[in-house]
Length: 193
Image (cartoon, rainbow, N blue to C red; front, side):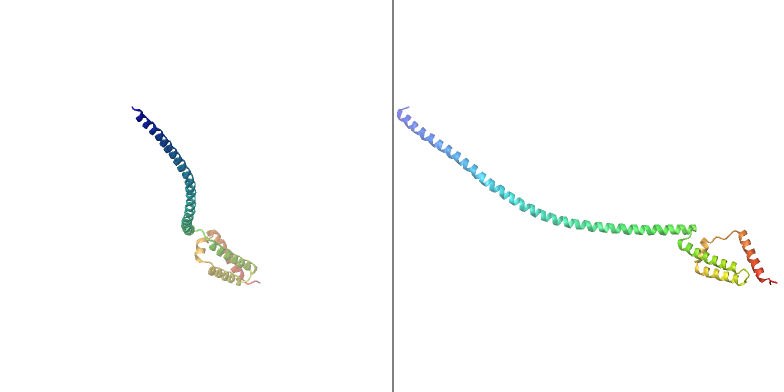
């Protein structure tokens, strides 16, 4: 190579080296600028995303709260209906049970509370009539008093209750009672001397 050529090449090399160094420096500075811009924009971008997230969260909460209230109202309404149906069912079941038990007791001949109360009243009236009869032993009108009292109580007491619950005394007891009544009647008819 000739000196001239070498000089040209050597001149070009330093100029090329300088341009490469300048280019590298510019690339480095561009990278630093991009990094700074990214940091700056990244912070702004991050803050923008946070704001959008807050807006989205509040909107979502409002929509969710509205939906929850609608669902809660529907569930409470359904629960109220179910409770009412269950209550009605229990009431009906209780009535059916009471009716069946009442019919079964009636078929067995067990008196009701009303029947027992009517019979108790009748027994009390008959007892007072018997007491009156004992006091008026010598008066023939006493048997009429007993008959009137028996008619009154028979009219007041339900016939079905009497038939169901009134048991006849044994035959021997009935005969004894008839004899006592006959003795009193004959004693009342005999003239006293």
